[in-house]
Image (cartoon, rainbow, N blue to C red):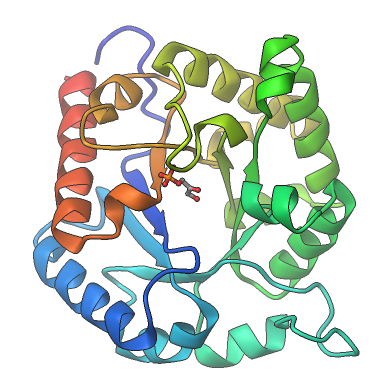
Length: 269
Ligand code: 13P
């Protein structure tokens, strides 16, 4: 293994957020092709997942081979039921067999005004209902410019995990998704910078949960593409990739998965 490269996990984590793209039919086609293309990769080496729109979730959960690919929701309300027009409850997601729930995506925080406290409520509820829970944190261009990204991210993470017990950590994944790196206008983070931030998050986990921090994978997301995977996956603190646009074509997603795996294997020697 090359110096400093972590063997924290035996596998890499690769997923895609489909955001508000693809209809039900298109998502089912995407699932079928993705499973077909990647079925030969041992899942002891890969954790593969994607997050369809709500209207596609039920059919995709039924059609998926959950041993090959986990299916997740892009958001979830913390209450089981109530006067929350337009929201989706943990019971609804559990009933259709969702594996994973993402909480606190940059677009939820930026466009829909989700606060750290709301993120915390959703995280606690998702964990109580037994979902693998993917918590996203991210800094803005402004915070990056003023050199306060690490402080902001520590605060986001500490608030998001308030009340989460050490026993619940096995159900937790983190993603660092800088707001300034996401989408067509975004610039992918420099791999060294991303690695440093992942280190900050890992240290925060160690402070909050002494001795337990190594159980939580931290994924990087924001303009990930075939061209920058190598640089990112050579970093010791990056356990996987969370991809938007570049993974919406299943053939390209398959290439991304394979490159992520091969880079990590090479780097580990
Ligand atoms: P892009 O890869 O399109 O920048 O999106 C990343 C993202 O938001 C994943 O959640």
